[in-house]
Image 1 (cartoon, rainbow, N blue to C red):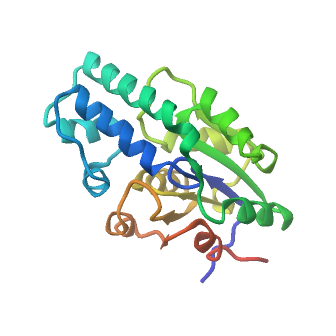
Image 2 (cartoon, one colour; image 1 turned 180 degrees about the horizontal axis):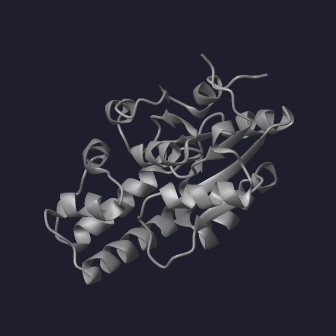
Image 3 (spheres, rainbow, N blue to C red; image 1 turned 90 degrees about the vertical axis):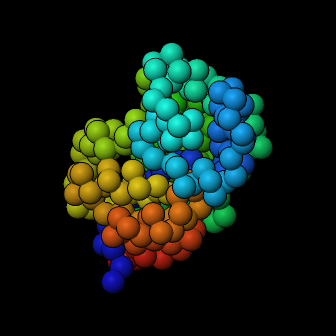
Length: 218
């Protein structure tokens, strides 16, 4: 059965933006900074979790102090930012988003990436006009959960969660959607395996176009 919704909340990294290579390079910059051997993409997927601090405690095999976490954040984002220009949109993204808007329905974007970088990046891809609202992190250090941010994102737009689907690539997207009573569709294009995503009980697809086929057209 297709989901009846009137609004999509999109995730950005790993969902609309194909940045996996940049992410892995940035993760391995952290590994090098702490004297740990580099990870493969599959190894990163195995340890990925929210809050992000837990992911790094797993790969570094110890608890992180506040100074450690600040170092992780700095190493990761400095490397990621250098590679951002190499990232492109995921397959089917521009056409799918344009088609959704053309149908008279709405969409917005909620990311756990920094707002000051998110907005110009989206604008650079020519997507800004498609979104009713774009929200990213406004804190100095990232990595927390999306649930509270999603609640504020929906409230700011006066949206009924039962009319909303969140499309993302990690379990935290599913947790956030469930916390507000929204629907969720997950894609396997990002940082978590199909097995991990399927454990949420929400539909799992392999691409943005496939995710959109699960939404009712009337």
